[in-house]
Image (cartoon, rainbow, N blue to C red; front, side):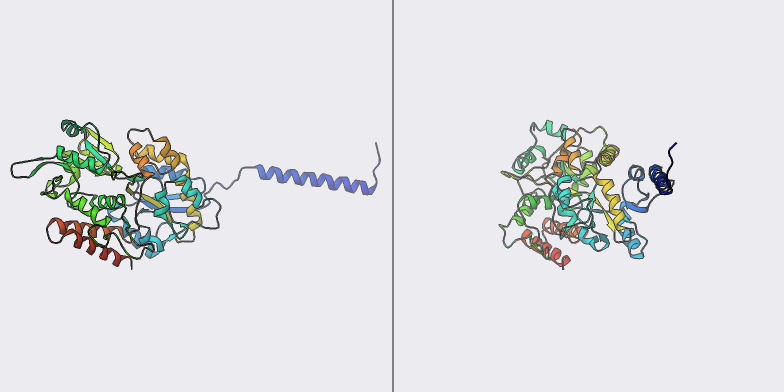
Amino acid sequence: MPKFSKKQVTIIIGGAVLVIVVFFLIFWGLRPSTNTGPAVTLTVWGTENSTVLGSILASYPYGKINYVEVDAANYASRLLSALAAGTGPDVFEINNRDLPKWKSAVAPFPTSSTQFNFLALQSEFPDVVARDFTSNGQIYGLPLSIDTLVMVYNKDLLNSAGIAILPKTWDDFDADVVRLRTVDAQGKLTQAAAAIGGSLAGVPHAPDILSLLMLQNGTQMTNDGNTAATFAGQDSGATGIGAFNFYLQFANAASPYYAWNDAMGNAVDSFVAGKTAIIFAYQSDFARIRAKAPFLNVGIAPVPQAKGASIAVNYPNYDGFVAARTGQAAVAWNLILYLTTVPANATAYQNATGKPPALRTVIQGDANDPNLSVFALQALTARSWHEADAARIDAIFDTAIKNVLTGAEDSVRALKEAEAAVTQLMR
């Protein structure tokens, strides 16, 4: 047995100790963490069904999520009160038209983070998301679904009218209106061709249809700085007034394209009763339609476009998740990214709700789905405009429509007054 000097013995002992320490550190690092509790606790508010969204949020691996389902009718007022009192949620839903209204309470995505950026937003979501949920180069929200206005039609009524090919342009639509409507000897509509041209009293999405027509017609809705509305133009030949007059003609009994009267009642109810051939609706309206008329022979088609248009324009209505301005904004954004950018979560949400997707990858997969393809593909060409207060703008547009229909004002004056009222909201 070899003999070691005192110095050699010291080196050998030191090396052995070092090996033991390294082994211990490696072993300890590979052990599962004994801390099984959540890293964070976040509260999420929304109008989504708690069973559906709650199950997806429960799979979030980095914390505990408390989801609160709030009734849509009271959502805005409850949210405003909670945020003002400092008891609001960490993450909440807002409509795509409402960022200007809630922006002061919303924390943008941290610019220092490398998890997500503007290029990722553009590559993963349709362009409308960047228009609706970014401002000054910052991202303020992301959606789980994108709904768009579509043409819903009664197949039996169109078949009976001999309409074999659905209208692709508004010129085609005009021609079909003449074939679909029925009037009695007094000129009263007994079957409406389409619910368009009326006010909110009869047409639930009247302001949306009007906005769609203006955008399709090339109307510049606001100035470049979003400090004033510009949709009325300066004369009767402007694109905004042209779209307004086109809309109104369908509720004008003297028009050759008379198609609707608010006396027909609510458009959805009239549709399910078989008294209206076409309505313009969102996917979210279908639950009501199916519940009232489960056996109605219903078809879905893209909304008509302007004749000769090379680029389609569609109108969106959807919610996005935003982070409240709290001390947990950074971790709240981690949750938003998990919820909205993970394809498995988007697919699970779609399967549970039947709602159209927001992620481009899922949209591509739904391109041939008979129930979702129209909504999914229209999301790619959806456009919106800057609205300082969407609910009040809806009321302003509705007033303009009513004033013309009742004869209180001509269309030029009514639209200019609407433009002035919207401008006032922007100041």
